[in-house]
Length: 147
Image 1 (cartoon, one colour):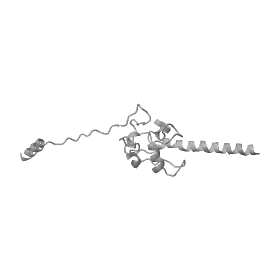
Image 2 (cartoon, rainbow, N blue to C red):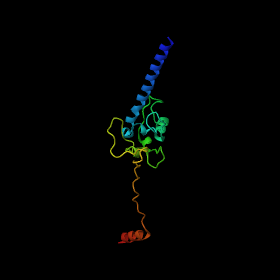
Image 3 (spheres, helix red, strand yellow):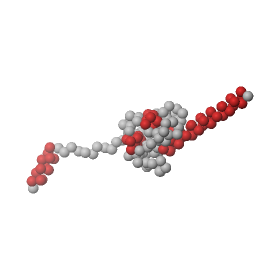
Image 4 (cartoon, rainbow, N blue to C red):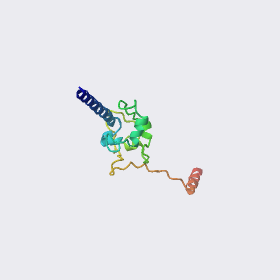
């Protein structure tokens, strides 16, 4: 009798663990280009490993509900953050800098950055094209205005 109860308990717990893992794998499809790095989008070394800074940000502040049932809340707020502190926003790293992508849409175009991949580098910020006007340039502009 005890062996039977133990067997039922093991099978039940095994089913719970499998359901828990499957429930969280849905989150890969809830961020833009999440399937490119799969579980490493949020984990340090695949599902079940510790969360990386982006994964911690999501679990702490961007789930519809706590635990496995929660869905990722992707949008401009999460996209604008730099969860891993590397100088590139979450959105820039995932190819959706403005956070406009919606789950179910095609992945945004552009390359996604994958922090765990040494071949992948974060996108560079746009170059600053503003040129400060010199004093001589200001004088020429004033002379031109007098003509």
